Image 1: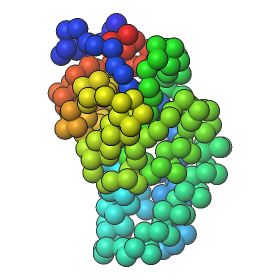
Image 2 (image 1 turned 30 degrees about the vertical axis):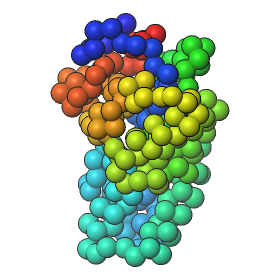
Image 3 (image 1 turned 180 degrees about the vertical axis):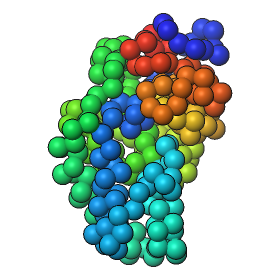
Image 4 (image 1 turned 90 degrees about the vertical axis):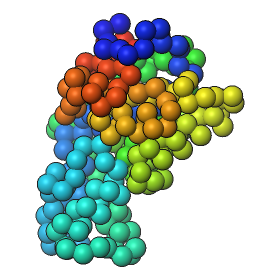
Length: 232
């Protein structure tokens, strides 16, 4: 197994939770384009979320930070509802024609290996549930994941990771956080996983290097999902 590790003999996981963006798929900028289109339609402002948020933040955090930056005030509940709706509507169309969309190396083969090993699979994503599931449609990956926790469950990444572990325990019975491995590509993913007591697996398929993910607390760090998986 080609991995940087702080754990010498990893146990086989009972459940593996996956982040989506830059972990399983690259959307080719579909999310950013859809936020931009939503702000432009509602406010006439083509907002660039990249200027106001960072990789690994939840959708509610992205929406709030961008709204405050471009409109210089907080949104009310109705405004957020309309913004989320326009974002999701645009994303559903854009993701189907995004030229840069691709499944990241090793993702599907790893998923199949985990399934064959009897390991439960779930999602833990900062995206709203509708956006998270939409992003997996072109790759036909939704069919593999039994449950998930999303940015629409909590703007706090650590809390939503804890919720994903709670959901896993409802399905798998006597489950401890240490039996849950969480795969992500950002320091936010590592921080949230470690705070929830699960095993963090960083994959350098996004904007961060293996060194950066290890420095952020990744228990295991892979250069890609083709490297194999701890405990298998």
